[in-house]
Image 1 (cartoon, protein in one colour):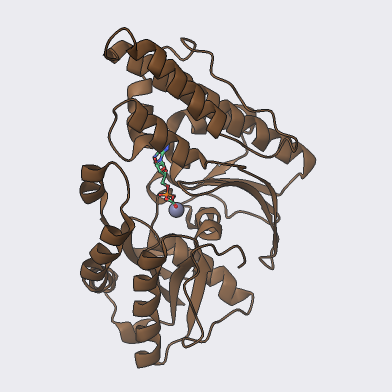
Image 2 (spheres, helix red, strand yellow; image 1 turned 120 degrees about the vertical axis):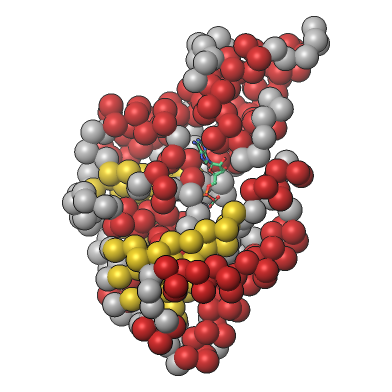
Length: 334
Ligand code: KG4
Ligand code: ZN
């Protein structure tokens, strides 16, 4: 089965052709990072307009690279939410139009679930087994979720304020580092002392939940204190980045370990933009060596994961009506 995946929930316009839910025939992404860097973060209206210009060339490119035409596609899959509504609409309207014109079936996909199911796109590793416990860490979400084979799921822990990626982005801004903050912090942190500052790790009522806003505020206070005597030095920026990253990673790793003890899964999956973080990957591997990581290149937003998730949804008997399918910026269901 050939699935055309389309993703436009935030700052990447992406299209992919995936065979039988596992083999990536093409996965093309046009990033808007250069545009949003000017503003230090995503500007929703700018993002939506950029998707309009990119979507058709990106889809054509994905079909071309996969050496297929639209006629060869069996199913169209598109991110339905959560995300920026203006950006989601471009992908959803394009996918609906293609489905109506070609008469192909269509499936709307939850972006967060797709970040976890991207683990089925492992190049030569073993396929994940159900039930799956997923740590999904992105710019908009941070959650521990249990997925069953029929794709029913239960969120067993989640952030009570900022998402992990959002915290990386905000702290990066405080430190004068470029957008997106995650990769920038992680790079600068490599030369820093992660014990230079003792930043707090939130204690939650539900120990599987997360909170990053106190950590962010603690970094802000420390930055203000240091800046009182002059601009931050490179050394101070590196130490602040490393100490922040250490605290953020400890909180993610501790909750995930607890979740595994409490709800032993068949497979532990780690996905989402922040799952590209080297420190997070290595510390999780130490305490949970059996964890399966979404390949680094597929951690950020991409359409192959949307197609992979749609394949599983199709196997569970799901399909949407192209007319009724809508974008939903705060989508929580399947
Ligand atoms: O999943 P994603 O591409 O988009 C959303 O669905 O939000 O995640 C983007 C987030 C951004 O906040 C970015 O700063 C973060 O992932 N990120 C990282 C790293 N690479 C991307 N955070 C920490 N370390 C990284 N290496
Ligand atoms: Zn994402």
